Length: 326
Image (cartoon, rainbow, N blue to C red; front, side, top):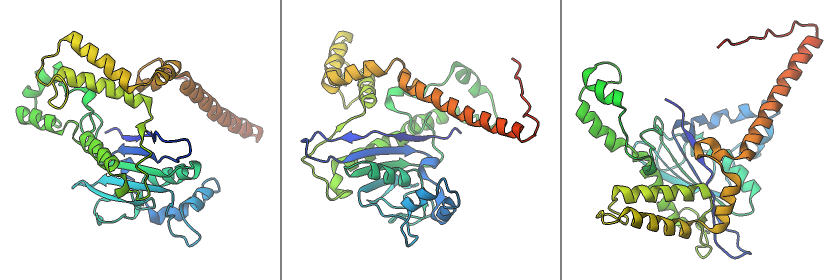
């Protein structure tokens, strides 16, 4: 199964006065790597490498205990029974399998150093909303509504009922029912958790100033909302307009035009046009992203070439080059 570690660096920026310091909210979601299996007992190992020793100083105090962050908070949904643990960010918000669900455990995921780094870099307080469960897939478990329902390929429809073996359901009709039920389940849990936290931020971050307000600052997520709404209209979703199917194509188009205009500001439209030229799975076709990739690739290869040159200068034979035939 492909590893899914999705960091939605979706900062929610408050629509507040210029003097206010709005709460910055980041959503971290995924499966086992986002849960985090790294034991606190391995922290000291980080200090053995001079390159990572400074990070260890950030992660723990002079007494050797994990840092408790004064400027960052976390709410974490996880576990077989979908329990939440929350509080000031510290170590222990990693994998919780087999541990006491009422308090942080003894492992970390990416959330610990991510939150510490964000807190150090930002003047505003930081809130992390984390939702992670091991062994899940983007294909089924985290499938968003905009992806539509799970669809069997023509090959599966034709051959699954005739075959037996690993991965082939014995009861094909029951398998389809189970698949439909499982599709998007953890996506819905994740979205529900985000909404629960944001509906009552003070429950997690007691000093939150509700007068500041906030809005979803990531433009890509606003475009996703637009796509979702179109799907809801076409699917006649019971909680959205056109639940009874009365809207014509022209009416749906008019509704979507207004919905998008109300959601995405002209400035955001202009910014999107400046930086995007493709779909999200290609990093929006943003030249800035690909330029940084190319630069990073070049720097990495230059380091390897320098190592090879030093190897030859030391009197060793050059590394053998391999040509891959088509």
